[in-house]
Image (cartoon, rainbow, N blue to C red; front, side, top):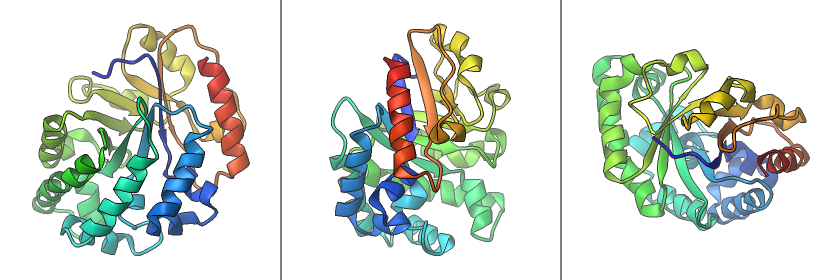
Amino acid sequence: MLEIDKTIWIGLARGVESVSGAGAAVWREPAAARKALGELLGVLPVTHGEIDADAVIGARDADRATGWRAMLEGKSEAAMSELALAINDAFRAPRTWGVALPCPGALAAMLGDGSERAALKIGMQMAARLKLFRDAGASFITIDLANSNFAAEERALKPVLRNAEMYGWKRALCVPTLADTAGLESIADALLVLGAEVGELDARWQQGLALGGGLGEQTWSGQPLAPRHSARFLLFGRIPAGAPAHAIVGAARMISAWAA
């Protein structure tokens, strides 16, 4: 498991789009993405910066299926590599970054074939494409289980998780609620919970459990975090689409004060 201390794990892609002023189009310009990401990291006290794959492969402002097919078939590697290197350039140790991926089964269904055979093929293709992110300097992956469950995706995810382990990456699973973490503790290095509040996690943090949460959408609209008793923590959340830059700055100040 991830050894938590004062760990702040944030999905940054939507924040980059907001800060840049260009929206999703920013990902087509690696230099602009790197600049906006640097500005964001200048205010947010992030230890683990998560970038979702839709942004990296250009599926945000284009046909999502077309973007994913190009990625899985290796047709967009040059552009993706340039962007991944630009993302890496914005980070300075001890900060680290990684990529969030959808489950193979959910992706297969989106591409028009929800069969297990299609999911297994996509799992193998995704595993092969992880090398691009490794070469660029990424150090973790997040598998998004928001619209899936691990039992249904386990076979297709095996090559992805195996390659991530081989690269020495931390592996996280993102789930909707704390109840969804049951049985997953031995599978991932961290469990990230979209719907968990600080009050639900505080006692678990005191036990050293790598359970993340606390930064829901309300965080980015000015709601303060509940107080904590644990000296160590794993805050997790994703900047929501449409969050204005001033709201992100306000949330960053609040998170910094809470974490101090």
